[in-house]
Length: 502
Image 1: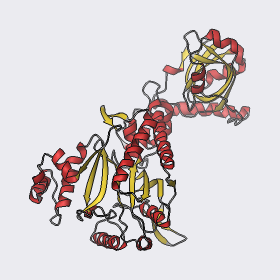
Image 2: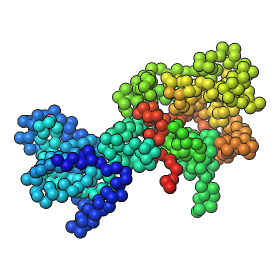
Image 3: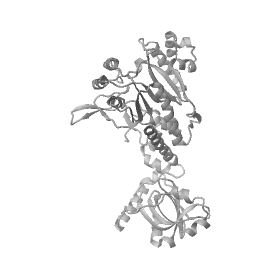
């Protein structure tokens, strides 16, 4: 018995195997059409398994249920007058039983020389083998696409993690978990989109090329528009355009968007990433927090079947009310400070220094509290926790609190020690916003590459009047990491940013 399923080529044999496959392709070209395009599969593996997976052969075979399937040849066992193959399509796998008497001498002889990775089309009838596996008794078999490169070893797959990211197409062919992970991501996006529409939000599209980057403190990618002969920036956030739409009279808008930030790459950061931003007139940050809980809970249930998920072996309870703490309260709850110490600038400076952070001399109490939160608390927030009351200095687009003008009506949501969402009551006072833009522009002049530009058109829009508004951004990639138990953001991005191959 020639069992190709257990005799995969090693990397050192690749060039020889590719050459052999090219020779087979050349022979196919001489015989006629090498890549036919006229086979239409009528069934998928998962559908057949669902409909007939429980039927016995005594029930199944007499029905002579005709099926046609297509997919990639993943396993192959060649015997004397009959052989087996396993076909993989987008939904799963199904076994083929290929007998010489059923398909003919020529096709059977050709099948013996086809390779793992080839894409086949098969027609036949369903039956169950003696070992109990649902199979197709093939009557017609065709080679639709000749694979020129050997698949990785069946038992080990792709073992190089960077190669998985770089050759995602091979990763998806050979790794069931990878396919399931990206299917779950797709379900997450669909669930969020449907949830937003059901709650009367209108989906919109805003520019990806911006004349002025805005909506976040981040370093942009810069390009040049030839026809306009001007510098342009890939968007770092859609925020300012979405709020222009609130000014225009659309009271609830959202956008699932790709944004770009010319910053570092890590397990939590990719320069190109996906966010969902939404804005609602007459909402404040409390309304946003309530709704964000609902969005995440719904997405988890659709993507995983439960609002209780597990990440890195530890439970995450999305079904329970999310905790809400001010920055100051978080220092007491998670950094071991008393309430008095959390309000003492000298204590905070000392604690920051002990954590290896040197606080700038101009930092006031709210900034010191926020600095220590980032250094000592953020990574501890495993269960969903909203942190609220952020300093004005680090929230240039958020509305200041009426009760304490030094902080804003802003929150960030942390889960498993990572920021997943950021939202706030929007600043709709055009004069206050202009002053904050000017302060940001001064910081940029002083060398802060992530500080915002002054956006005169956005100020003009606010001068027409924006109703009280709440807005929030949810990091889709980090949410996908959580819902698929993935340790790196690259695991949930189909084609992450990588250094060019040599």
